[in-house]
Length: 359
Image: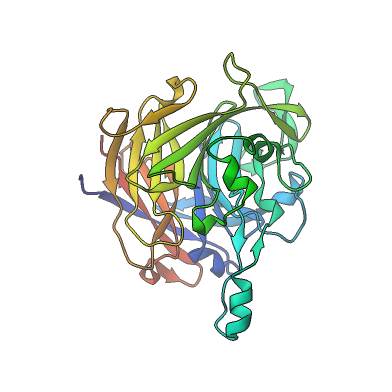
């Protein structure tokens, strides 16, 4: 197994009111304007950090997603777990997952009751795109290069309790049972934690379920039906609304996705509520795949790049983005949930890692 090559560290400096963000980073993407866009799985916002000196990002600004797309409500978390950029849109996804009540350790009988309750935060069923113009998120505006085209913030069409993707998957032979009988995300239930976009093609990586050791990436194609609303397009000649790509990630689930040319970089980690090593894979020529597929390292379609350093109980890698650094165009920046306290150098600043891609 190739060792990871730590190329550099990048300091992320948030405003003084955002100290809780430091240990809850769940997604990141780097845009051509030089900004980093970061999300937490506990908020209703996305955060923009701008370069202020080499390897230091600051000038933090938070954008409330309800200002751009319609949410189910103003209270439930979105649980943003995946983020990507395809010019001129920033894309993000909620986890689309359910959760089980967590014991609090104060009253044993109440804790037992909490373990029987499964809850759905409806805002988790969000798949959205937001126009980025001059480093700003906008709800609607003329395309800078084509004034006859209007850029519009939009999200996948909602249903009463979820969205049209979940409705389409209810009859799926692999994923349908996890929707009909909704296991929570931390129990190998349905849990989207990765996103990558090429034009209108969207790749969604599942932390769970992992089926007999095989992880799943779902590929969909979207189109806008009216301002603010996206629908699923039929793919191929069979009228299907999605393709499923099965990957042997050594029993790991997907934590994030990132396109690198025609290849797909996959940040993989343990399923459920488990501790373990995080690994980066490369799925080759993913844009050439047609229909459902299966890939493993023996076929040559799937390549192990490196393992991330493992710290028990800390540094759960959640976000991955291409990030040119120190003259190296092929590098990735990684942000962490439950970050090791040593990364935190100020009350509002924390280090992320940059690794050189190993081919």
